Length: 246
Image (cartoon, rainbow, N blue to C red; front, side, top):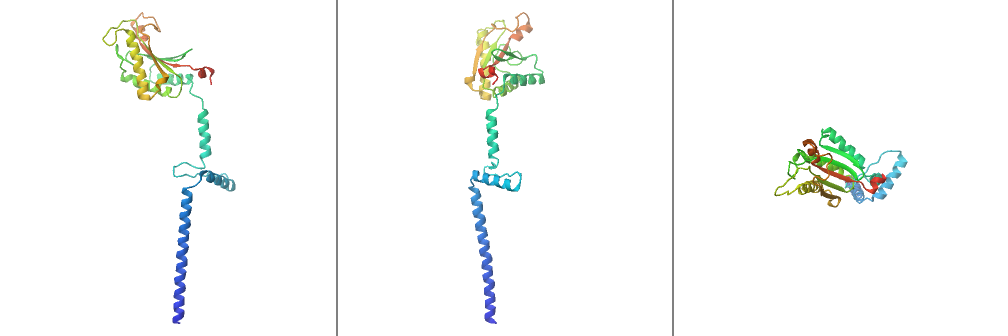
């Protein structure tokens, strides 16, 4: 009986070892599986997922890697990227429409106007009490929101842009601006500097010009007319691509 008792105890000890060995084996298999998933080949995994979908029906399988990108979603992302690559650029007409909506929403019809010309889209902004103080070329704070809106649209099209300063026929003679030529050019340059410095518009797209009082939009016959002529025009030039409508 004593010998039998020892045999019985030995059998129980062996069964415990078998259970322990099974647990170690399962843990090893688990960690091997985890390691294999961490170095998973995305292409093979996507093929495996496609096979599972074919076997188990039209379920949506989503798997994420450590970077947070779904392997099964890779084909759809590639298609989306290709679609974005062939999307047409914003047209001058759509730029004008968005600006017109902004102008109406902010009641700027009397100080900001847009017009389609042969050379492109002209955005005309009066200087007085909007862009600049009289006789100065530093942008007013009130002008920045409008320029921000225009810059946001310029970022969506590749067209070259000409910024043109204009004055009325009243002469100016200061230490900084001996004539309206210097004033109009300085105002155009102030707008360009803002577009470059604050919005990163590529300098190669931009050009500045000062026309003084040589290109009035209305005759300088009244204070109101002169105020209309004191302006800065941002001209989004039409390109061959835009003219063909491509």
